[in-house]
Length: 130
Image (cartoon, rainbow, N blue to C red; front, side, top):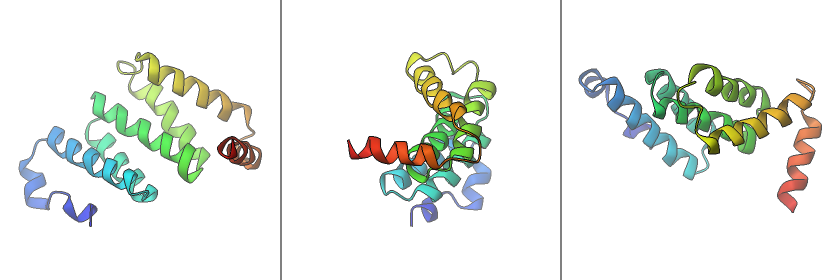
């Protein structure tokens, strides 16, 4: 339903890229709130692609990494997304809150052998259990 709410082809052709990206970001937030993580990732990735130089594009890419790390545990996607936040959005990376989050999560991901994510999954399970 939520994805169906996105602009039709005619509306998208008339709307500016910024308006298209904002709409996709809004839908992504709704999908995230509904715990439809795979769909949210897809929509946030589209939003980031539409707005490659904007703060909202940065936030969309950040959301992809966060969902991949925290919810779907697709750590390869998390690494790619978090690194893209640093490399593709240097003007927006300066926010201390996002910088600290990215630093912490990339450090954890870098310390885990790529492709061998079981230890990280166990750590996350233990952390979630309190």
